[in-house]
Image 1 (tube, rainbow, N blue to C red):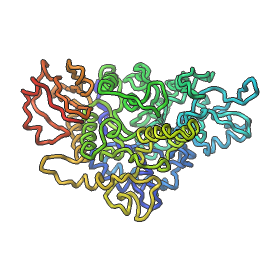
Image 2: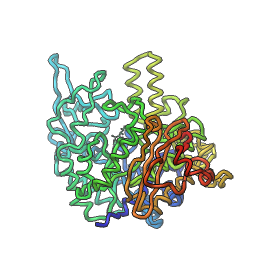
Image 3: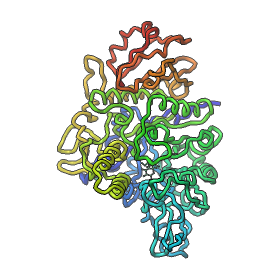
Image 4: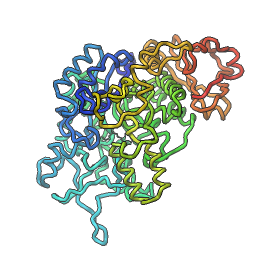
Length: 592
Ligand code: TEU
Ligand code: CA
């Protein structure tokens, strides 16, 4: 069978629209702003654009709370703007995928307003309503002990005083979960997909799609985090009993009639067989998923996300090998990514962002790592510029995300007046908050327009990162090739994506193996793999460490390295390296 598919080879660029480009000077990015930058995106070597939600929304969770799936929020523009965007994307031979958020709606969606209006509403069972429980002293309690995902101190259930029942709201109270057990809900969702496919979009990124089927007895979760009242409940709602039935139904009734790219966001699930039920060649559910292994690498396992956890190169290798195997040996497919709008910046997380020189090396290392892996590659806006986390001098009010606010409030409540705890909470936010990925795009170094993001004198909805002065798209694009051959991060990404395309038989479809040395110390620092096809082979060697390493993974191999093709240090130096000596004595890898 021919395994080639356009959606496997595609590079997808994710746009977080509020922070991309503001064309009308209200401080909020918009759809015309995306259209205006299509040449920039095309020039980078992108095939598909994924736009985070732009539908009508009260923006309790930045559009992941949708009030109307078939209309655009006025802050982003109009349906006509989107039609124009689609036309312009197609004119450049690219495709658009939309963000489909159907685990929950906004509490302002007409369906929910109807549902909450009365116990006898015809839409009552479109959502998940349950009576209260009462403790022995008569205190009203939620139906079970599940914690809210974006506010871990809170219950996943919200009390409705009018009809006197709780509704399930896994993310925030403003995002009530739809009841997928109800066939009318599923039919309504199918209609949303058709609406956008018929308008010319080419697929979907499906928000937390693995949470749509819950264990309907709604049992209490075991106590995993004793300091908390409410507990992680994912075991009862991630990849629940009817997930595959629902996904297959979407496929059979809708997707099978179109040529689409589908990627399902799938937190909490690690089991290979479970993943293959969705993305296996025979499964016929979704093309690929977002697995969380790499972005969860610095979370304490089993705990909530605002924790700090040490990791090293061995963890990265273990995860990568597992995910690569899933595709290449077990005939599934998957995505490759290290950033999105929910994650801190990758240079800050996986490498060292303390100086701009190190930041550039780190960004290029992560580019080489990702462009040499099998899977559909997702690049998040600003990643191609090597953007980093917000400055650690920023005050708490610069963090706009509801999740960050909930976390901060919880700390204040738990540890009133405790300066040490407050310091820790600030540190965790600067490392983990989703806000880190949401600062406005730095288009140029003009301070009056916040780096070209908005109009002169306008304050953006979220403060611009002062780095626009050093890493703007304009400066990086036009940086003359310097004497030492050091490309800008943007130029490096452009070349990386072009190389990936040119050698797609290796990088997209080829085989994979880790290349390890016998020296345990260097194995904690170095990540290396070999990719090969019938015609050619490449190895990637990355030092994920702040110190120079002499790495002996090339000794005693049945293959020889002929040539260094790309590197994040001085490019010209590659040609003068002594390969024979390096094979014998070890490859000298400088920091990052
Ligand atoms: O995220 C779902 C999710 O489980 C995580 O990515 C979560 O946001 C993160 O761990 C919290 O730090 C998706 C969207 O990508 C996110 O922006 C939404 O807030 C969420 O669903 C609810 O729609
Ligand atoms: Ca705007």
